Image 1 (cartoon, rainbow, N blue to C red):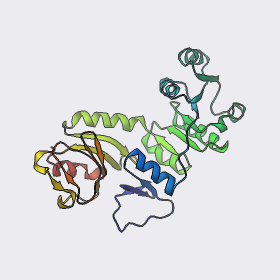
Image 2 (cartoon, rainbow, N blue to C red; image 1 turned 135 degrees about the horizontal axis):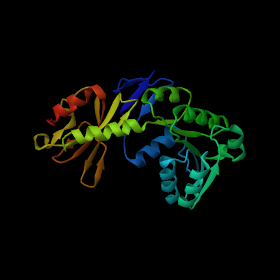
Image 3 (cartoon, helix red, strand yellow; image 1 turned 180 degrees about the vertical axis):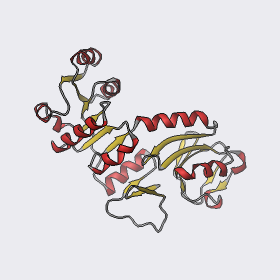
Length: 265
């Protein structure tokens, strides 16, 4: 566990941190270990067989094309008739439905509630929120929504939307990475930018040093070490080598200190 969110505030946990009801936990590890974790401590990981997409714009269409390659059953709802015609031409294994994703009767008639996952990606936050709430009412277990305004993300999370994704955050990360040196990347931000997942290349000055001896800055955790073709989940006595790639989780206000520590300026 590399992070914990409580009452919309992000913390970096330590051995004395107590987990409370309602906390959101952030884990980092190999896909295999995370699958075991999910099966042991949480609900079993369910195989996604069907997805409904609300919004047939560029994002919705590209998402459907990606899911078609995974042999997933897909429905896509788009209110513009001409756009539906284009979608039908582009998507050979997707059921295209011309209608309004905020129409509860339509959602019920098209059995959207039976989908394993519903993804609302219209270009309007209010519409995405309403669509998400409606499909939750129909019994969909996992709902993902696109959120244009970053400040709206807490609202989506508070009303029970499982995942709220901001394209703005992704764009900001890309710009920041363009401005950073080659030895550091921002892979992702979490909790509206409160936390960052950083990728840092180890310089020769740190070769063969154990993590416990690094005097690593507080409010940061080395979650994964990438060494050539190997993925290492480090412990305190794990030594880092030159050219290792460190995947670090830290609070956003601590990112500059991490870069300074590893002499990445």
